[in-house]
Length: 244
Ligand SMILES: [Zn+2]
Image 1 (tube, rainbow, N blue to C red):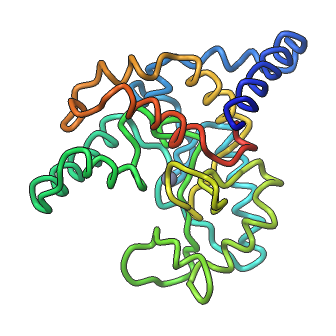
Image 2 (cartoon, helix red, strand yellow):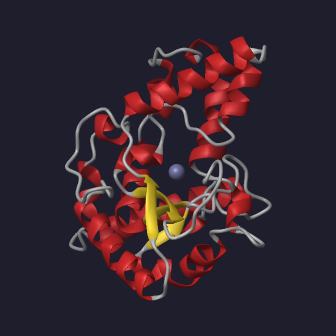
């Protein structure tokens, strides 16, 4: 059922593209595979923001509005290149397999609860952000779902974003929809849709399976075709449907 609607949706967007060539949508063909995988330097804007120009401008507008409502939207992480993601991946893989004694596949499953395979992170795009409320002082890991709910320090931020972020074209990526697979709920991760939607469209046109098979980082030798196919379906594509 899901697969059928997925195909239908792709078909429609292709049709829409061919019928409306003058709406700036052709821009989506301009993203190279190296750019989509975080392997080339892109122009980033804003100290401590590091986003593409339009995403930066929208973020600044959103931050100002939130500020007036007593919330300090602070970016914990935005652009991250392939090599940073590779470092994160390899560190986790070695910790889980060598320190914790996990089997490689078990370690990979554990890593992809929250971290992406290098080359597939939305943080490579200069459109996605992880945010907290800079006014709140917090102990321990700030990117913890419990901090965004009940009496957590970032509840007001989350409520504000629920009500306002879409006005600035920022959307939650990894929602708490119970039927969603892939990455766990990330109440802190937002994406600037006007750029990330065409980037994802372009990325899914590439042969991601082949691209990942060609990679050579620690742990990548354990990737099977089946694993990568599931990863693309669940971790890359099972996101907030507004962002597809
Ligand atoms: Zn993130």
